[in-house]
Length: 46
Image: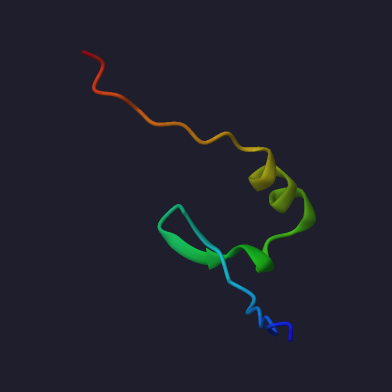
């Protein structure tokens, strides 16, 4: 018997200029920019 999987949509938020907004409310251009961003860690510079 296969186990049934239930998924729930996860809302993502971003903080821009002090305001926390759901990404789903962004226009198409801003959402495309979000997907093009590169994530990186900032080291201590030692």
